[in-house]
Image 1 (tube, helix red, strand yellow):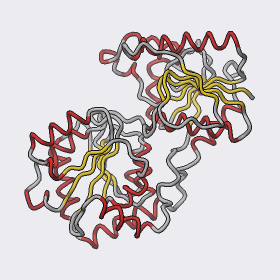
Image 2: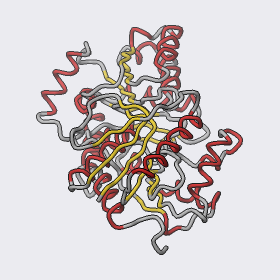
Image 3: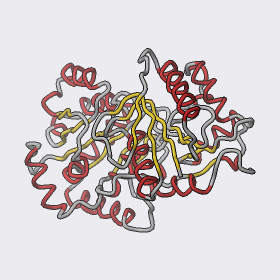
Length: 368
């Protein structure tokens, strides 16, 4: 089967891009002929994938999607594909991966051109199947657009299998903490987000600065990501906490960093699902996240804490105070609770396989 996957830009370490690559590779591993049409590709080019790039104007998301859609139609005129799957709002494909929340739920805050694209994909007149991740997504899209329920295909959580499966995690923890310059008495809270502001890193910095000095002395922050990093580093300096915060870009050793950490802090402003949440849980990390996160149910089931909306800065400061002050025995038993959940019936690893199963068994235009 010839399958075409589309995304505007591929780069390592971002959740949507990781889902894109895992799905394309899973399809290729089953013997399918896989082409990836992208505006740009950063990182290694897997030999099993045929990668085609098209120039995007870079003048805004809507302009980029217009260019990607044009390139898609031009390619489709030259070649025939058995299935097409887009990780962007591209009308006319067989499958759309809904990696974001419904724009139509808050139209006043959305680009009108992107709303038009969303309308075209989710309209009852469309035949595109929708890959979705959590129930609130399907409820929002159905409520706004009246999309037929039979067009929604639910995917299980998807994460890096290396998380939670690091060989000799105790030794890795000692080594990685030494690399980071952590004292044995210090706790480490980690935030991992490509877009730091969208995922609330600035909120974490403000909450951390509000801790009593003795609590800050026991808790360090590790922040990994790209977008908004300069602004967050400036904020940390202005708050007088720069010496307690480690900033870094995207890291290939995230599974090892999760071994070194004691908690994941993720006060996101928007998060349709949140693969980093389940990667932390699989590694035995207690998680603190906001109510907007699609996987908040997994956080709660594993013993983590969910901050109610609307967001209360004081509530996050109280959480960090609790994390810094919990006893060693208390933290140990909390982590054991998380691991018990992670090693139970939870399915954290099969998203790409399930996605390819749907691609093989469905096609846009099939009877609903």
